[in-house]
Amino acid sequence: MTPEKIAKIETLFRENFERRGELGASLSIWENGREVISLAGGFADKKKTRAWTAKMPVLVWSCTKAAASACVLHALQREAIPLSIPVSDFWPKFKQGGKEHVTMAQALSHQAGLAALDRSVQALDHEAVAAALAAQVPNWPPGTGHGYHPRTFGPLLDEILRRVDGTSGRLVAIGKPISPFRSGWISGSACRPKSWTRSRRFTRPTQMPRRAAPSFTRRSIQRGR
Image (cartoon, rainbow, N blue to C red; front, side):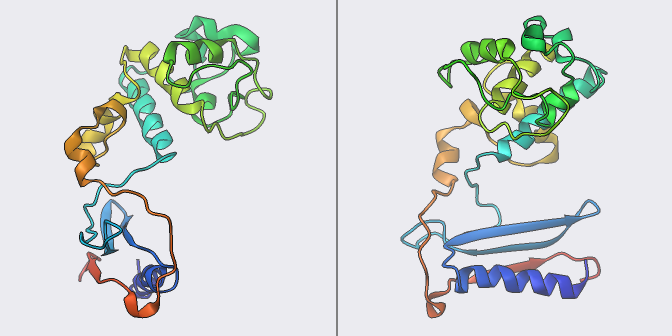
């Protein structure tokens, strides 16, 4: 990454505070396996008593889909299972509704046609959700198109993971493949009160005047600098 690009990113990051009322944020960019820039600024609480640092834990939502996919991919690689294999080879009831040929690759890439369920189930009842997914007729012919699975992706991959390597527990297994990469990822019931106190609560955005822009820290790690 060139110095010009780094300078542009720093400018845009700063403008997010000065023009758009950002309270606190951090940004890390990696290139060829190395972190080339790390930016952090602002505050971690609405009263502006805690500085936001590059190591500040934050809440995420659909980012868990990528972590869940990493879990499944890690398990498939460990068990030498190809992505082209049908999900039903490990989950026999998944064949219902014409899904017998849905592959692991299609399930992992939002192409399985299971973006929504016809059956009403409690989201926290994993067995009920898994049964509904197994019985569901695809919303479109699997493999013919992509459709985001906002609520069903997690339970779908969780059940596949349980079937492939016996791992159980609301994506707690996210820690297994990601820990070696020191991601600091914590998910679901793996969370502990210590993590809650360290994490940042979300605050409704408000416009912040330029003169009230918070302090800004910069740590550039570009090669040769």
